[in-house]
Structures are given as structure tokens and as C-alpha cells.
Amino acid sequence: MRYDQEMQGLADATGLSVWIFRQLNLVPELLKAACSIMGAYGKSTTSGKLVHLRSLDWEAHAPMSRWPQITVYHSSEPGSIPFANIGWPALIGSLTGYNSRKVGVGERLKGAPPDQETRFGTPWMYVLRDALQFSTTEGEYIRYLNESKRTCSIYLGVGGENFFNIVEYSWAYLNVYDWQTWKDD
Image (tube, rainbow, N blue to C red; front, side, top):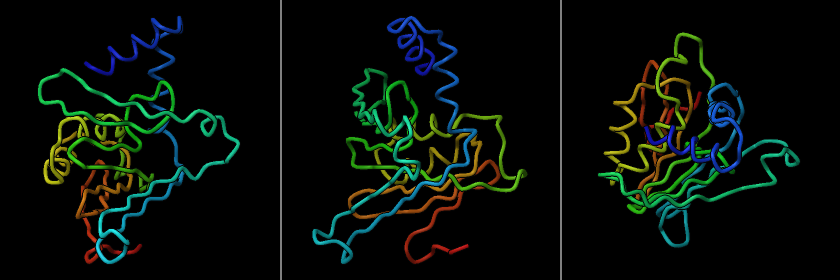
């Protein structure tokens, strides 16, 4: 699996155990942090094109804030398209990203009742990355999310040049909303 190979590469390069990189990349599965996402396009922007925002609403002096990193992937894996991950060193899943087909994603942890979450499945950061790496359209991205073995409950902002959707993602369901169908809890 591509994640195991990347984590082994990180371990080989640093001399640290691959287990440390596995644990680091699973931290977001355990957190109940609060981030912000926003999408605007059309008459809401001066260009008419999508402005997609995701912010990490953590303490400004947290260690994560000191070392941001953009990693651009040009994989030779069949079906892969170039994409960028926006995160920190050693983080290989996607919190925020954008691919060469102009599909982007930003996440906001939601929190949900226990019957809507599980830890058995594909970690959501890996699902988001795989969807960026292999999806060429909004429809493919949403289908990839829908067909994945989901875990935690999160909100996603999924956008492109002329669309922005909020996706309610959990083990139990996947709901897709636009600006007309969004329901405020």
C-alpha cells in the first residue's frame, strides 16, 4: 500500500520507527478539533470563480503552526493525477488538498453520536487523499467518498471552478449539500 511505503521512506530517512509515523498520521482520527471551511463563487466573488478556505482553528503557538508544508505528488501509479497536500511534515493523508483537475477539499471535524462513527475502516485522511489522487471530477470525488469504508464524522468542503458542496461524512451516511440545500443544525 502506498501509505506503508511512504511511512517506511520517512522512517528510513529519519532513523525513527515506522510506528511513530503511523501514530502521527492517525492522530486526526482521534481528535475532536474544530476547523472552519468556506466556499464562495459566482456573484459572491469578484472573479466569479471559487474561493475555498479551510482554517486550522487551533492555538496559534501550537507546534503544528510552526512548520506548514505543501507536498506536491506526481505519482506514476496507474490512474493517479498530480495533487497537492497542505499540511505538515510527515503527514501523508489529506486535511486540505487540491488536484490538477481543479477539485479541492478541506475538512472540518464534526463529532457525532457513537452510532455514527467507527474506528474500523479507512482513516478519513487516507480516503480524502485517495479521492484527490484518483478523481478527475466532482462526481468521481463524491462517488469515491461514498464507496469508501468511512470512519469518523466530519464535514468536508469539496469544490471546483464552478461548484462548492458541503459533505456530511460518517460511517453511517454521506450527505451532499450545496448552498440551496444546506441545513443548519
